Amino acid sequence: MIKNILTLVSVILGLPFVWIGILHFQDPVWFEPIVPELIGFPRFWVYASGVFEIVLGLGLMFSRTREIAGYGIALMLIVLYAANFNMWVNDIAIGGSKFGTNWHILRATIQVLLIAVCLWIARTSSKQYGSIFEYLNETKFR
Image 1: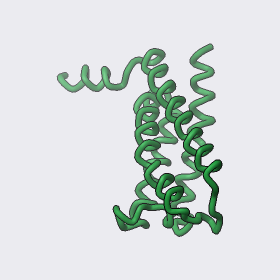
Image 2 (image 1 turned 45 degrees about the vertical axis):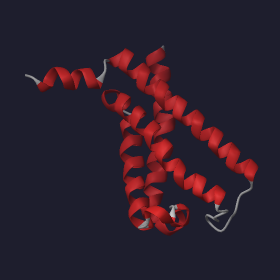
Image 3 (image 1 turned 180 degrees about the vertical axis):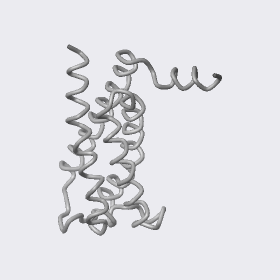
Image 4 (image 1 turned 30 degrees about the horizontal axis):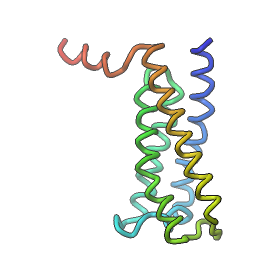
């Protein structure tokens, strides 16, 4: 039962990450305004985050890579929150729209929930299928 729920949740979460990652390549200009000026090169960061979203989103959909993808997306969401925070603090429009404080608080709350779900996916996957980290450690010395 838990394997079915895990698979369902992983696919439901993975598909939007893949789709949003693809959008980073189809319309990078839409994402560029929220890249913090401090790190520069907005097009590069939009493409890089798109690659991570696609790869990790796909990783969630397969049992063998689900654990590492879950941890990877949780970490990615923490790192990418800098762009969301930049958008909030500097009142940056995205897609021609600016958003109020309540919207940004809701977005931050959803981001925290997504991180929690990804960590659950990663931990549950390691219990259900065995940890990929243990597997790599065992095969490293053969």
